[in-house]
Amino acid sequence: MKSNSFTLSFNMKFLLLQIALFISVNLLIIVIGLWAVDRFMPNYERTCKNTSATFASIPKDKTFDMLIFGTSHAKDFSRTTNHDSTEQILGLSCFNLGKAEGHGGIVPSVALWQVFKQRGNTAKECIYFLDPWVFYSRLWNEMNYFLEDEPLNWEVWNASFRSGAEPEVLFNGIRSKLKPSYFMSNEIIPHPKLDSLTSLEPNLVQKQKDVNYPSGRDSVVMKEYIKKFVELIRDIEDFGIKVTIIIPPTLLGKDPGWEAVQQALNKNGFKILDHSEVVKNLALYYDTNHLNSKGIGIYLRSLLKPIFSK
Image (cartoon, rainbow, N blue to C red; front, side):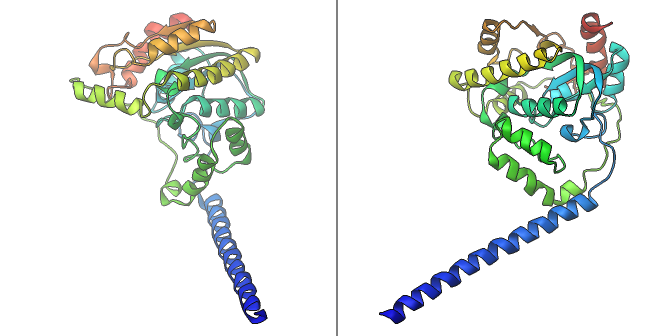
């Protein structure tokens, strides 16, 4: 009996030792891998114009005339050669806190704002290009893998966690640094986006709407993110920054979630400029959802400059 107990105890200790060794070896591999990423990743100064890694481009102790928030509809004002055009046409210094590839939801925006503020930056005004669909799914918010293209940084990971990002988002951000594609994320060389549409296919419009609403349109979920959004805008305003909320132009027509979002925001005292259908010329878009460089320029001159010019 004692022999059996001893054998069982020994086997249990041996199993625990194997588990501990397995965990230790894997942690060591991860640490070495992350060190290699930090050591050999492309080394250049990241700005609004040359990277999709918005957190990494946030400076320290700067004052801007204009902040730009939102999804790819916001980021497009800095991608290609559009950042210089935006500053030149508006006559304002701008910093872009938008994130593209679906990474500009409410939760990511809260984290971006926290890091921007913590680094001693401020601005006079803010345009928030608001897509109604970001209010309807966790995939655009807590479960949004918005750290995939960002360099490892404790301040950013901490702000993301405190803003509501799930642990899986943080772990995915770490895993993504071990992929070859991360090492190849070189500096983006700006050039005008001149592609344009010649026709609008209804099936592509519906397909994009389906992509925007992966979780349907649940009013309970929407109200949860309305609350987070209101808190974010109030915090920005309390920092002395005037906020203008704009629904960006697309070829998708009225967003199916817009009416409910508009009513909820109006109840909280927000007025929103609806520009969703003001630009209808196909030649000014590079897809059903985004203005090309020519479209950005015309939109800036005709609609935004009269609002924001000094």
